[in-house]
Image (cartoon, rainbow, N blue to C red; front, top):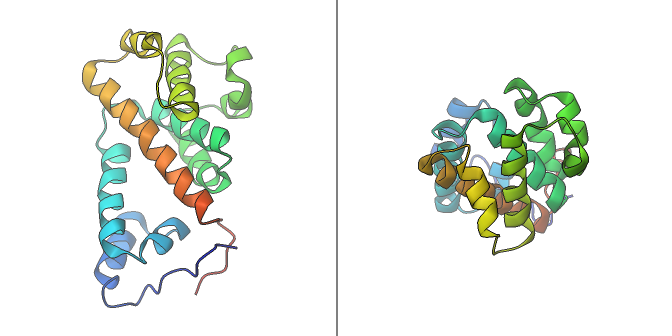
Length: 175
């Protein structure tokens, strides 16, 4: 159970953003209902994560591998539950998802995916990453994509840390 009650979706300050989220995403996920305690933060979060997920030039399968790996490293089950179906839809295989915990020892990942996962691990486990991790990713992605990839890794570390700090889970009761 979450450490705070979920925000009132009918609160006057939240209602315009609730309507926008429902229009854009179909429903208000637990994550956004918690964020809606602060509509300005929720609005900024929505804008940032929409840019990461829908306006980035990083191939969607790579993006979803990153998100799933961050969720695994950070022990964020809500994040993984939300993104596993998206990952499969975007071209990540079930075998890759099954072996993502041990990707370093798996043959299911391409050199590009391995480079991206190495950078993901480095950024998620440490603040500073080896220069070689970025250099290897640059063999596969242009400068814009590298920036967007690094922003994606950072963004989903933010997501998992928020989720886990407030103990948000998809089976929580909400009002």
